[in-house]
Image (cartoon, rainbow, N blue to C red; front, side, top):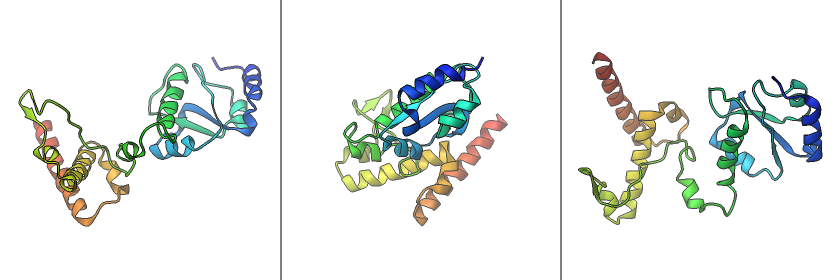
Length: 191
């Protein structure tokens, strides 16, 4: 099942889609990245087309769609969930929605994943908030956060490290985390 081009063209024409940026969420699109969210968040007029089952007629894509975006390497039965993911990623980047400082600390803003977060109580199930976070020393806290961002990225998404802007000592730190991770991976495979 493919959406018929006639009714979809009428809907797109009713919102003057030729004068807007039209995005079609589809598994066969380019991977959606934080940089795409930032770019699209700055777009004034955006139209999202949600396909169903097999998608939409190729002639609609050829005539109206500016870009095809994939939110991941999997298939959904319709485009509504993918459109909501895109909308959520965009609106939080629009000026005045979230404090700029909060957005700048998010994962992918500097090519790294976000550092861990803690709240009260100081101890929970025998695990404590790191002492540095309780110190009130802003410079040390910033250093801890940076190291933890690198540590988490190296452990979970080492593919991101190649594009991250790391100082030579941070590269050494990341390499150490990767080497340690490699040893753990081998141990886990051995049983």
